Length: 285
Length: 305
Figure (cartoon, rainbow over the protein chains, first blue to last red):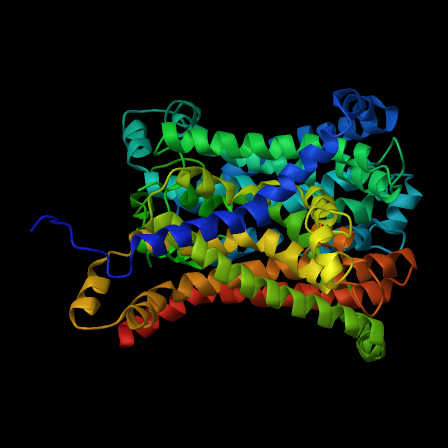
């Protein structure tokens, strides 16, 4: 036999194979790549000068600032609490764990608009805490705290969901060994756990960042859309777009698209360089 | 085999339920027997639960509470509002159609990426995650620009009388865009672990290509397909940012349910907003339940057989 490897019975003739590859590439180009190209083409279509001018106007700068501020609050909080939850779920057995895992996924399944409405029902004038907040002159809704809370809700699962499968696969052998050698809790975390999960953590944080800075629906409901004050970058894009200033809208959008690209590149790199740094697939049941 | 996809399963929202099953049931950490040798159980679980209750459960409880307080009259008013019905029909229909198309296209792309070797394969694989990483508002304005009458694709279709932007097809395209990664990433790991022996056995027993596909491959893929479909559907049902730009937002025609929630809020019709939101939330719970139940369901069937 010239070819010891058995042929794939579903492979078919070479031209069928290439036709299918071509079709898949075309579908991906039209559906996924084209929107990205569109953003860049529209953002830079009138030259880098126009692009830059759109980004340095005061409203745009205020929006970028608020977006970065929100992300700076949200990401560390969700990273720390995500780590804690992942530690509890992957290192211990307890009753109700499956329920807890399902609840962690909730924000993925809930509409962002519904999430925003929930915050209105808590902090709005008709809400649970509305009267108290008015009486004490605390402003949450249509102000920055609500934007932070909405973003926290939406990005809640990102870090913990990246860590759980990774920590599950790594197991606790190394940690148990360190423990038996007398390592304290902090040493254990700093010297054993953190080095093992750092790339997964970084990737989770990056996904969380991309979503935190790009969240639109939930933030839109609770922000109040006050220019220069409660407009995040995505809301700023919407306003510009609705005012038919599409070059400026796409210029702002190009910043977020750049963030998305960085996320993808990092993931590509991590997978090539650190094969075991991220959780392996678990498709087989 | 490259595994780009696969970790994403961790990254991609709503990790397939089988992960939970595998993660929870299969291997009990040694730490659980007897005393707990690893530190921090009380602190990590306590703080994690407190954080989740504060950030996620408390807001949802407020909605559930208010929805229960609507009373029969309030609910009848919401459900009999024709505009609400039209928006729900549109949202459910578009999400269903988009999830279906995304599942088909996603399975096809996963197949090509896993089975064939060609230049640019890894790049193609990496690009699958783009809709997941690209903010919805950015996707929304980009898709609108592409499919509107003077856009790159709209320009070609409009003269043929095919209207995509500011019509239902535009909504479906936006939802396919956001749903695609889920469809690919749930099927891909299964395809990667699927050995070729069963196919070869089927072929050697005289099964044709179509029979092999239907009787050997499809049953293996089904749990992943259904999980991906549910994920894409749940995401599509609640999607807002990528849709509102391309939809046109005409009441009774192209107004999706999440948009109607925001409109009711702006009209200070809180009960109207609460009613629609509670229905969407209930649908989210059903999807979540399905996603968590699918792996167990298939595992049981297999054991019985």
